[in-house]
Length: 465
Picture 1: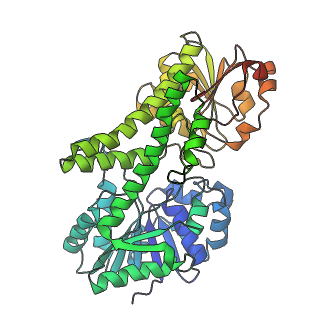
Picture 2 (picture 1 turned 45 degrees about the vertical axis):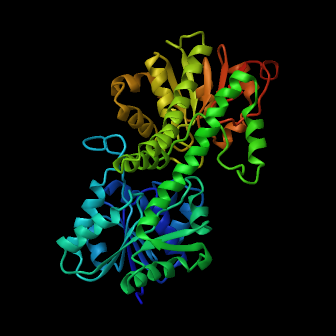
Picture 3 (picture 1 turned 30 degrees about the vertical axis):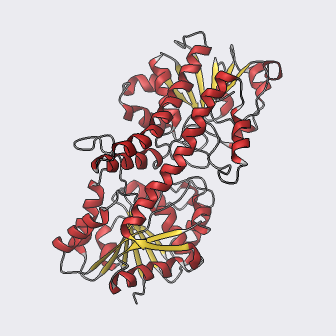
C-alpha cells in the first residue's frame, strides 16, 4: 500500500491553488508543494499579506494562512518538487485549440504534454500521476505513453481526479464535496493500490461513501458530461426567456413552476445573459469534437446547440441595449456593473461582460466598468484578447472605476452583468435622480425584482421580462 508523504501540484491556478490548500489543511502530515513557472503568480501566493493571493475565493485566504509554511508551499522549483513527490497532480490550463486540427473545439494539450515530459525527465522513483485538469477522454493513455517511453525506467500509475468546483463556492465545494471521483487502472493490483492511495488522502475529511472509483475513461468522460448537463439547463431556460418576452410570460415564474417538479429541481434554472467561466463552453466544445471524431454527428449537433444558444443570448442582450437607446449608442456612456463571470470570484474567463462590451464598442459606445474584484489590467487584457479593437482604442473608450456609483454617474444606461450582492443593495432611485441621464437599467442577471416604470422612475429591462 502506497503511503503519500509528499504531493506536488503543477499549476497554481484556479484549481491547483485552492485544491492543494484544502488538502494541506486537512492532511497536516503530508507536505504539499504547488509549483508554477509563472514567477509573479508564485510571488503572489507567497505574499506576506494573505489577502493578496492571486485567487479570490471566500475563505481561501484563511486556509492558506493556516497551512502556508507548515505543510503548504508555493515554488518555482518545478524539478525539485517533482523529484521529491510521491504523488503529482497536473493542474495546468487546457484551453480550446486556436489552430490546426480541431481548431475551435478540441482541447489544446500542449501544456499537459510538457508536464508529462518534465515528469519523465526528472523522476527517479515510482510516481502516481493525477490528472486534475479537465481533459478529453483517453488523455491518460497519451500520458502513459509519454511517461513509459521517455522516462528513466520509473513505474507510473495514472489516475483521473476531475474537479467539480463552482467558482465562488470552491472552498465549500472542496470541504464538503458532493462526490470525489477517482479513475484508475482498477483491473491491476498496482492500479488499485494507486487509487487507494488517493482515496486515503481524501478520506481525511470526505466520507468514503462520497468517494467514487471508476476506470480512467469513465472518470474523464464524467467531468465533461456533468458540465454539459449543467450548461444545457442554463441554455434551456435562456431559450425560454426569449419566448417569455414575446408572449408576456415571466421567466422567473416559469422557472419556479418547472423547478418545483422533483424530477427536474430548481438549480441552474436562473435565466441570465449567458454562462461563462473556464469550463462549460470548453468542455462542451470538447464533447462536440469527440463526438464528431467518432462520426456521431447528431450527438455533436445536439451539444453544439447549447453553445449556440449561449452565444445568442449574449448578442441578444447587447442588441436590446442598442435598440432601447433609439437604435444608436454612438457616443453614449454605458455603465457595466460586474466583469467577473459570476459573483465571489475574480475569474473573467468567457464572462458575458466581455462580449457585451465588445458588441457595444462596435456600436461606438463609451464604456465605464466597475467590478469589486477584477483589476483594470485584466479587463483590458480580456478585450484585447478578442482582437476586435486595438489596445489604444480600448483604453481610450473603456474606463474602469472603483465604485458602482462612479460607473453610473452621467450614464445613459446601466447593465448588470455579474450578480454581486452589493448591486442588490444600491439605491436605484437615488442613482436615477442624481446620476443618470435618460436612464435605462438592463438587468442581465435578474438581481432585482421586476419593477414598473413608475416604481423606478426609469425604464427597467430584464432577461425574460
